[in-house]
Image 1 (spheres, rainbow, N blue to C red):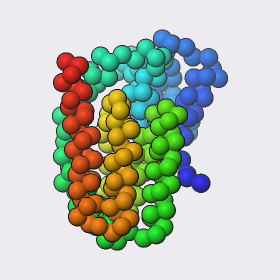
Image 2 (cartoon, one colour):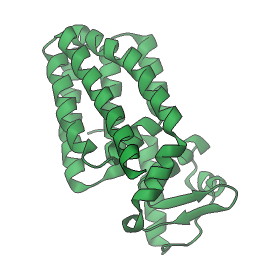
Image 3 (cartoon, rainbow, N blue to C red):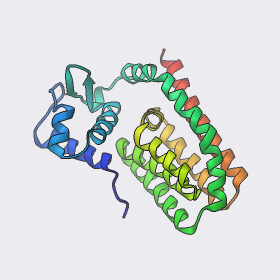
Amino acid sequence: MRKKRLSEQVIDEIERIICEENFTDGDKFYSENELTKKLEVSRTSVREALRILEISGKLKVHHGKGIYICNPLDKGVDEFANWLQRNESSLQEHFEVRLIIETKAAAYAAKNIQDVDIIRLEHVLTRFEEIMNLGKFEKLINLDREFHQILAKSTKNRTYYTLMKAMTDTLQEGWVSSLSIPERAEKTVKEHLDIFNAVSSHNPEEAEKTMTVHLENALNDIMSYLKNVN
């Protein structure tokens, strides 16, 4: 059974609190510090969970004022587009770095992947499609990052794996933003499968190619979305 990331557990706990304590749209929620103490986890884990819940439209963080409950059905296009605009430069940098290192890493993964890694990737691919069909946005983000972390570990290069884990743990914007774009999750299912097929068949050239296509498509979809809503 897949072990939940701490941030995913924190998200579940925050959603439980919202439900059990009858918070409704517009209510002021607990502060970051209060949640850290209440849930007995690190501030980093709480901050990551809040960021994901904000992008999914369930919370709104007003810096200097507090955190407020939102109705995700009221999350407008303008709100998400504004978030993308504020983070456009960091998003481009995020994908530029990944296009430099993750494409080559996919080739190394194809050379060095073991059967146990292939089984783990298959499980994540299956779970991703299941969760996508259920509309569980927050869980999709963690499964997406898990897929890329397993690939990183499959390179058998500890330095690269440490670097990739740091990116997936602290630089959430790339994963959050791309999966928020309409139809990107469905495209990700196919692109991940293409990467998996190349890596599991030990084809380094095809692995590098499919990873490049995946990352370029994600960035292009984000930029196209921004252009169309402006």
